[in-house]
Image 1 (cartoon, one colour):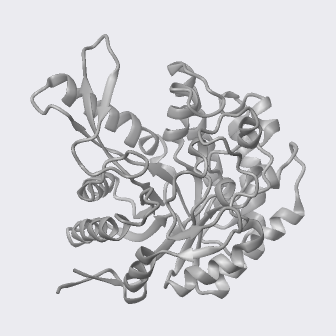
Image 2 (tube, rainbow, N blue to C red; image 1 turned 180 degrees about the vertical axis):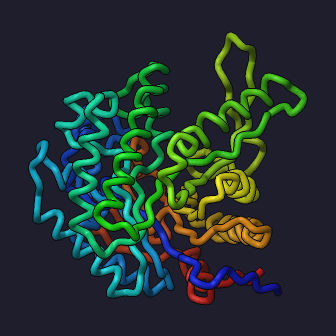
Length: 397
């Protein structure tokens, strides 16, 4: 048996997002859910009641050896109407930060995780020229209200949002137009730049980044020029565009990685086809490929910014794959760190089973299982194994 030690001060933990766990939301997603859009026929509703149970959930995380936790602020709670601030909601998030600090867990705070206030969407959302300034106003208010936060992420996966909400129309507002998707991408980049400056005004010592979804794109047919070219194009547009347009306003890069995708192009006149590459599949239908983690972090290291894995996990209701996959992912991560890549933390997705966007409650990513009727929490066996890694800062192989 070999022990792989991680760097001193390495952050271990898990992530959540407000809409997926808190419950009681009123935003563009909760309104869209009422139209019957969720694949399993549910609505987020109470989600997993984390708004009221956060202390219990943090007790579980701490018992598992986590020394960090990523969560998101719900913009629609903070600013229910333009320029109108909900002081009780701000006080709640101060209590969340305090609860983490009391348990010796570093807060990683995300300021936007896919959901928008209803008024913001009604006024044009991320297509509006006013969106960056509106976001900046909200960010500055939150940053000044939460002085005990060091690590901030302005946006979660703007590339996913532009793709699913404005290019393929799978998420609200169900737009399918590449020019509008590009406009949203550009607007969000400007919003990040303004938000970065706003956080620095509130706390010059804050460390500010964003969470970037990163897919390991590979040509399905290595001999095909079209497949190779399109794999490079997808990598540039999806994985790296946002980073390269905000690089001067990034103190670190959050890496959200789940999957490798093989790219097969039928012809220049036909759509791209993505296909699994023969790996076992998660409940979501994503291929399991732990070695892709090493390739992704090495690719992101080209920007010479500290990296934090802010999401990585799999839908695995029976908990049959999670331990082995997590072990192999961490082996790949350790190899990259040993090779000089500056990775400073690993935050698993997710702490809890939750509302998984359009898939509803069907996909279970949690280290902790949740009974969505009783809200009972049960620690999965994979989480108990991961606990040993967190507590000892090393992986036994």
